[in-house]
Length: 473
Image 1 (cartoon, one colour):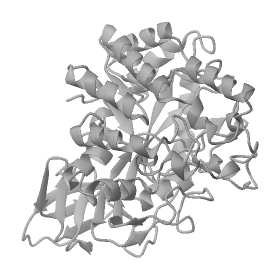
Image 2 (cartoon, rainbow, N blue to C red):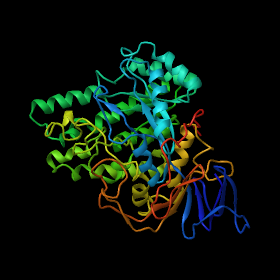
Image 3 (tube, rainbow, N blue to C red):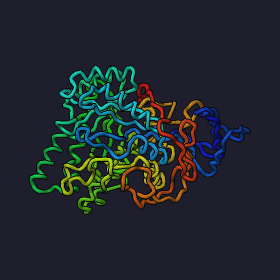
Image 4 (tube, helix red, strand yellow):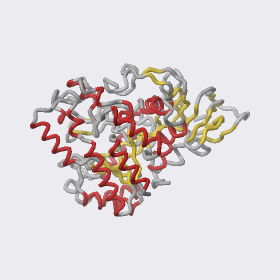
């Protein structure tokens, strides 16, 4: 691999920002210092820039199957991780949904192999726990996954009755097993019955246009599910991680629980912080581009999410990247516009794997809400700790993987659809001007993206991250 010296930069970790040079050799950080006489095969001058640990996106859906495995998201493991690298993300954590004719364990191994062939950055996998009627012995598979397959995090759906939703008894069983195995249970927290009931009411009233999706997924359905999940997890002594929190009311439930000492952590996503219902309410069928669950909510809701990030009630920012195209790609069945005017048939999910760091920097650091250390904690260090990757990843320190981003805090950059490396044909942040962006990206010492934007990664270079137990401190 050779050696690389990143000189004259300011190294920013979650707990400090110091002037230091960084020496990389054979994929690891081997030295930090000032005024050294180190030599290296390659030198990157980081004068006026920050050196931060590579981003860890703990929530992605690449080549992710929907509709009974008849179609999938637009980005595969190659295109999605190329886009991730361009945005400063050097590790992703994706999901495994049980295939209809295979066990969760066998599906997990197949998906791990598929990702290993195509990922250009390192990756890990969360297991999605199916309802008991889809696999009665799924708890046995979860034990096997936690013991030897690197799956120390399991996702439970409290939404989508009849397809993915588990009941409270299944949640209790799964949470209890997670506590026993040292795994971190995750929940998609929406009350599936409340959403289904409101959806039926809207359909019966003829209110099926795309923007009514947000009405169907009310704040109360999210807040109720978050509260219930916290109570159930505590009752069996399990920690809890709540994915993609979109409602300030749900964030307040988490804030109260954490203030009471409960072991709950949560993520939100850039689309909930910077995009609003008002941006798509008048777009007609083109509003399909904005549909995800939980939904992108009113602009007045955003400040509550920012407050949770500032106070620490919210632990991470991930993307929930599940990109679909508006216009039809040649190699995939119909996607976002397959049923114009009827929101229940719109595939849920939005793109963002490339934009996460830039969007959060603009809304958080450039606006004065958070400082660069908190930024690093949200996008890298805390995900590394919660998902068993720390201190190998998530920190600029001797011995850590050389997953490094040279960040220009004064960049003048405009995000555009044409400039994206994601496969989607639209971008929620199209036209957004940001004042910070990655200018060099290294993954285990390999210089993937340089200042010109040139990319030097190959499919299959990403390694599977065999994760340890979550660090909940």
